[in-house]
Amino acid sequence: MHRKTIAELSVALQAGEISSRELTELFLARIRQHNPQLNSFITITEQQARSAAHEADRRISAGKAGALTGIPIAHKDIFCTEGVATTCASKMLSNFIAPYDASCVTRLKEAGAVMLGKTNMDEFAMGSSNETSYYGPVKNPWDVATVPGGSSGGSAACR
Image: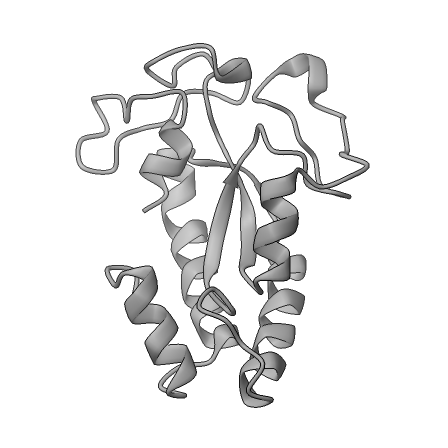
């Protein structure tokens, strides 16, 4: 399932081939398996993801789902997410819990997307190799001796 496009996953969810809860558990298992080596996630929101997946399945069965309903996603840790640590990969913000959602987070929640967690990045998005995070560098999943690039390396590496 992790190699399918968002469109393909959406079709599978709408057709009942897989539930959002099953899809979410598959992706959470991949995170648990690969994150220790890749360091692509700073925060994993398992309970929140399970709750959102349950709600997505309810919306799908009621015929009130959109294209993103039930789709697992990850937010770059620069986007404020209410009630979740938003560190911008900085020690200075390591204890900051966002009091509100960024507009993109709000829109994805409204669309029924399932947030799995917050991805690692260069501190304050200032870099191009993803080696300047307070939480450690992100590794490239295709070659851990190389960088995933960008300031969004966690998002790139969490594939």
